[in-house]
Amino acid sequence: MIGQRLKVARSAVGLSLRDLEKKINSRVTAQAIGKYERNESMPSSGVLIALADALGVTEDYLLGEQTMALDGVEFRKKSLASKKEEAQLEARALHLLERYLLIEEMLNISPEWDRPRGAPFPIVNDTGEAERAARSVRDAWDLGMDPIPNLVELFEERGLKVLSVELTNIDGLTATVRRPGKAPLPVIAVNKTAWSERKRFTLAHELGHMVLAVAHGLDEERACNRFAGALLMPAEALWAEVGKHRTSISLGELARLKELFGVSLQAIAYRCKDLGIFDQATLTRLFKIFTQRGWRRPPFEEIGALDPKLEEPRRLERLCFRALAEGAISESKTAEILGISVRQLNRLMDTPEAA
Image (cartoon, rainbow, N blue to C red; front, side, top):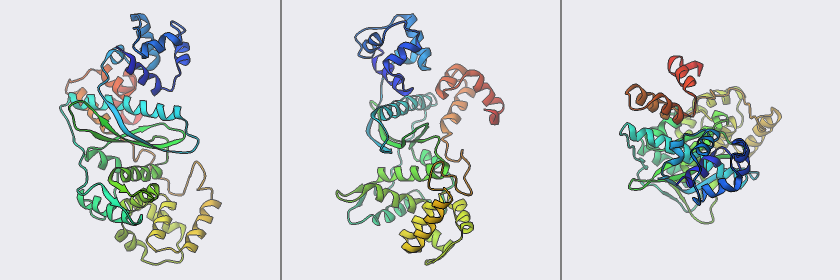
């Protein structure tokens, strides 16, 4: 039965039942598609092909068995986010994850989540305890106090699945992938179109939600922000660069710090305030400058913007290339998993920068 697969594929591309009816040129009605999704009837072979084409999947995908689900889904969203957007993101994540785990199975790879020792770390008195939690994560993962050059690569090495999808009013998602007979895996989805500085902070923030146990009554978002700042900018590393007390700092110096730690000027300013390097007056003066320069409004184009490709997940692509080279998968299946055409795949394989 194709019900669950069809619904996930439709939600993933953001189509309503009536939208899908129109996209298949009304071969069947929206009501009939609804019956397919409820497993009350099955489409004919011709309708199945039309549905698959309209949704950008194969007939085999629609006929396959749904074997995984997302548990504990949490969204980082703006107030404008709708239930439809949430459902679309959840469906996209599930759709991408299924492809991701399929290629790992083909290559006989089964990484496990390397949960940091001691996690979840209790935050029971104040958000400052998130500082110690971030240090514990760095210790558990042998990161030392150096800046982290690429969070996506680090997370995926530790068994976290990181997805990049285009979002509008949602910054990110955290969830756990549940599969029959296998250990659950954590997943983070981030906004593909966000600037890299924001992606890095969102990734660190979402890890906070996974490894912190924030007591009732404390602000969990604030605790995760403090955790993210401490993970990306360890106190000792920041003190070594700027000292322990400052009453002023130039934009040029902030830009060098941004290049070093891979975070926004605003994140650096907040971090300095958290550590007592800046007082409130210094922070206020800086944010007045940020506002005047337009850096606190979309598209947040601060000086020294990081490479937009910096935090793009590439592991799935690498695994697909490996499977293709080893003959474990066909070109058409590889293209399907990566969500591109065979022509685009061939260009990517021959001239990577052209893709």
